[in-house]
Length: 77
Image (cartoon, rainbow, N blue to C red; front, side):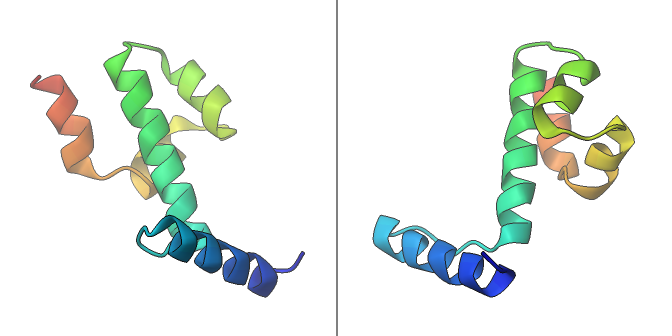
């Protein structure tokens, strides 16, 4: 499956589910943001986050994927 085919299938799936359209990039960002949220809510380690996401360095996640307001909101709950 190439990128265009995946994009078309994902678009159709979003339409069918009646949700906003996603593409591969924002789908991955959403997944990683949710993984970070899970780790923060459950007081888990960065090693757990790396295992969930498949990244080697937590800075990649924090610098490229995570919206700052999400990270900060869990420290003040």
